[in-house]
Amino acid sequence: MASKAHGVPADSLTNPLCAQLGIRYPVFGLAHSIEVAAAISNAGGLGVYAAARDGPNELARKLADLRALCPDAPVGVDLLLPTALPGAATPEDLAAAIPDGHRQFVDGLFDRFNVPPATEGNFFSQYVRSQALFEEQITAVVESRMDVFAAGVGTPAESLARVRRAGKTTFALVGAVKHARKAIEAGVDVLVAQGYDAGGHTGNVGTFTLVPQIIAAAQGRPVLAAGGIGAGSQIAAALAMGAQGAWLGTVWLGSAEHRLPAALTDKLVAATSEDTVITRAHSGKPCRVVRSAFSDAWEAPDAPAPLDMPYQQALTGRLLAAVEQHEIAPLMYEAAGQSVAWVREVEPVAQIMDRLVRETRQSLGQLRSYLPA
Ligand SMILES: Cc1cc2nc3c(=O)[nH]c(=O)nc-3n(C[C@H](O)[C@H](O)[C@H](O)COP(=O)(O)O)c2cc1C
Image (cartoon, rainbow, N blue to C red; front, side, top):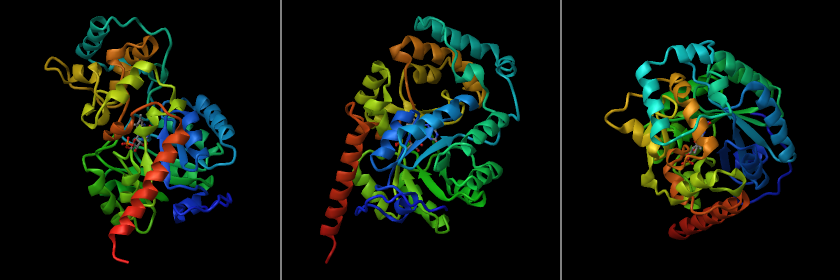
């Protein structure tokens, strides 16, 4: 792993991985917003921009903008690279394969919630998740000035080798020991052990159970803990388990920089840990989201089974684009983990980071006080 010499002032939380990456705090944050990713990095953590919904040209521009927003701090980009998808396909190819019953079900949701059609396209109306698209996205990453690349789903060895040759530190999110083994074979530098509690695509092993097993399998590589983390006490617990940091997604949804529609923010602020569900209706793969009329509709007895990736998003893309554009509150949702309990108000990223760091220090101090001298 390439070492960065950013001359970051030392701090008691700056562990070896932080020093290697040139960051101050072992707090890693993923967000679908370059403003949020930059703010996390500027606050002393490492921000990672989730770019899976950017076409290649847009991605190159976004990464240049992200670099400009945090010129002096390390920052990263994340892509989803599932390997079992078509080599190449068009939105028309996918549309032709969607069963009529599924199409009628989605038309029914348009009618039931009075959703006007979308007048703006979205990622799913223009692109299909396919190996050809992933190659173009990887090229944009290779040519960017990102310090870190994270593979969210899948660890194709060739793509990771290209990114590593470009001098970037590679991370992979893993939800099971077998995924960690594959990531290690593919040459990944850092493993992110993401448990069942997490927002987004998730496996079925809880974070507390998963992290020690991934550390044991990591062959000395640094491991981060992810899934359900919203408080510094959990970051301290992750460090106590031997993780070199915590990777958080949901808490940043409550950041001012995210600028989510008000109805969605209200839903997230009101949600407790019990208000998230795992559904295949989002992407075709199990994904934890905040419960909404959309996830409820797919659970109803009359609902068809969600289609596999990439067909499910090709099916629901026009509905979800319209829901977003016209802000149809009941159907609005976002991926969210059980950590949504810590999204209590809208506050700047720097304030969230301050709280996490303060709480981590407090918990570590408390831990020391319990132990014999
Ligand atoms: C809104 C949202 C979107 C996410 N999108 C991605 C993604 O595109 N790529 C990825 O690797 N992980 C994604 N994740 C998962 C995060 O990387 C992270 O592992 C997870 O959020 C950790 O659990 P937490 O949500 O409880 O903090 C997403 C999570 C959320 C909440």
